[in-house]
Length: 224
Length: 224
Image 1: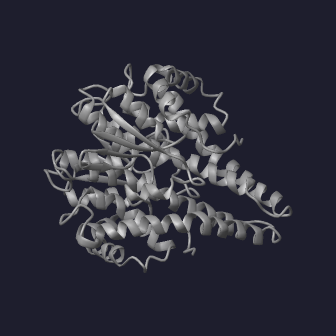
Image 2 (image 1 turned 180 degrees about the vertical axis):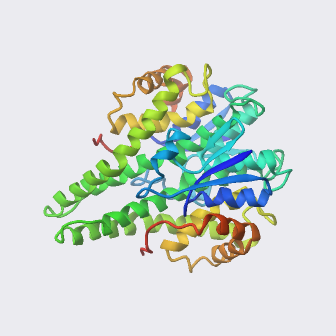
Image 3 (image 1 turned 30 degrees about the vertical axis):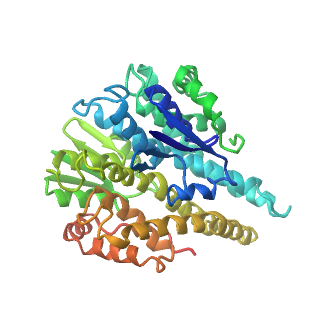
């Protein structure tokens, strides 16, 4: 029996989506955030207490990339990933790592600087906090996001999904980071990413996931 | 022929270490940073221009976790990773994702807030920038680092390497993040991590890697 311990409105939506795609039976145990983090009771399941956590029999697994790889390897019946012998296989693995290892850190940093700018503080600190946050966006976050989004847009320019004609774990991993990017950066210069996100939102398994787990979001507004 | 495009004093050291462990022939092309990033000429090899980049015949691969997995799967001869059928295999994969996906973002954020605190700015801004940085450390970075370091220390309490008696790709991936943690957090409360880092620094392949590629570092001092 598969149990998914998830955090509401979080990156956990990816695993719900995948479980829906795979058509396996699972139980969804969803928790609410305490501030920006998972609640302490999740530490009873895994010492870090971070979502998502997948339990399948004796296996308790964390890290979304590893969970996606595990579920597709175990229940995918040859779908949702290239075969290990395919030339593409390692590019697929690269996307599984890239989503959290290279792209998501910019989203988290955007969230932290949003807090720097909008947190409670004395009025005379506010303009300086704003200046520090804006400078970080201008000198670091915005140029990096442009670089990454341009490269992803280019990848999507000649194929419907990241690995070609078929939806794979690469798309599942990248979905949340790109939905996050759309929430707080201007992604209108990247038409292939816009088209790709619409495609995800139209996927029937994704829609079932949203119905069960709610819309994903990060608690911040757009910053430019 | 394997070519590793690496950035001096960076996380690329892990791949050099692994290539030394595997005893395969490779060429190391090492670049110097431009500011905090890889130089623009690395974009000729891969559009993001981030190190490390591995080239092996027709394959050009990025993301350290994927590179480690690829090299060990291809050249490991059954060493440096559990077998795919082992109960431990997915915990191994979890470490490959965890290092960059969950632990390193705190190091990068520490680096950014170090810049916030120590960058060029008018004298009247300085105390406020310092206050913002310290608050982020106290409320966010330090508690998160304690949580993660405690869990890793616990993992290492009953075995020499993360997966047991043998050094694996999990250790290679975790080495840089933990060396980074040692540089800028007080890790004296974590004796098993201290012992583990000494063990890494004593490894003869690691020493050869350091000789070829130089000591890894992030350009910041310790912040508490």
